[in-house]
Image (cartoon, rainbow, N blue to C red; front, side, top):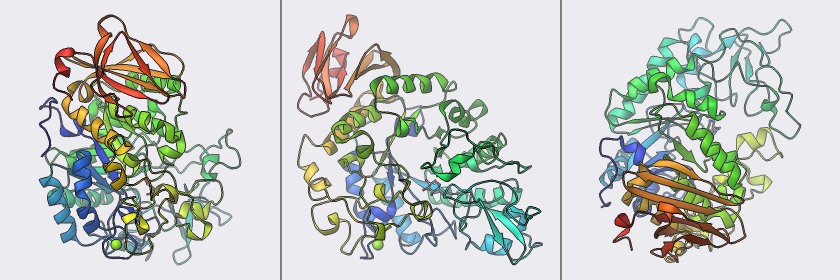
Length: 545
Ligand code: NOJ
Ligand code: MG
């Protein structure tokens, strides 16, 4: 069992939680098809329990033709046979709950698969009752697409349907037609899907591309982007002002929020890639929107202490009153942190993620430092890479099998995995790192455990401290408890001078695992790429070892 939480018991669970994203295809295969499944996830639950995470978010597990690996859903209320059955899901949910782990599903309301019965009906004829469930438009006078809107995955966002003589809109693949969220029947249908899973006991949703749900009702052309250069994804050549982040989307999200609130203690998380000042509008008027609009600021941030300090300040300052922050370091769409910031900085990155103010999300494999895997051309699976090859948009590299041990297929499968396991899996794997007290895996565990013990880390304020060069320093404070975090983002050793009432304490967690419990007085010496979490309140540090 987990140690009791020190956090404020009146606050919602997801504020003090650590979230963990699993890409189910790549976590654990049990039936020998080379693809991860729910029984596999069930078998690996002990890993999550040991890590100490509070909630699990599963990328889509619904029936799907898998054109976009589950983000193209053909049935919202079942499980794809490749992953298992509804009974497997119920068993997993039950087992997770028994371990005190919540389960969040990925809700993909923006689009369905083109094989979803709703779309099959919609395309059957112009006067089908479901015609208006999707976005159909007449051709332009020259017979071409109705306007210049581009697909995120390359090419026009409009696909022509010869049988009915109209185009349908797809923000992603043409096999992923967008639902028409201006249609109340569509809204009601998806809200019923949400209730189906909430009634089953699911603890909430991560909502796919929530900022895309509403498009311009006048179908105006998007303006061109003067900053676009060849080599960047083609859709970025336009500024998507008419296809995403439309004002009316907030009304829809508030409705979704009300559905979630028909049930107790559920959470609504939104996937949103927008600049901070736009992102924070997704908390909604009077916090009627997403509980957590995912904050991806660290995914693109140059890994420099000053830049990160600045973006944390910007984010903290932009949050609406009562809006709870969150931080993400990796996901199934972006290069892994090891490949972005380098291995040397993995511990510092972990410490940052788990000590900033707000709910952190860990992407599977980050706890052992998995890096992006180079995918040979004949093994590319990602449709984005297939459509827009060679410019580095491929997402297979960050979706490779979880590295459990040094065996064949990294302990992931008895068969050839759907994507190749990392070449470093013989060394960087869960089994090896469990046995090494100084490993990254054990650092994640120690950090998560420290969060659980110290309300300053979960509930506390964020107070940046003046620092220069590669040093990032801040204090988290809750009541009398104060925790100082000092991170060296560079290769040169550095001494942090601590003054006044922040001068003395004890190391709670050191990034290399060899200084926990060390007394700190007046200054803190940090080695190359080292970080430390220091308990400043002596009364709170007793009995930490
Ligand atoms: C965002 C998801 O994270 C990504 O994997 C997917 O391809 C698109 N949405 C389309 O659903
Ligand atoms: Mg399988």
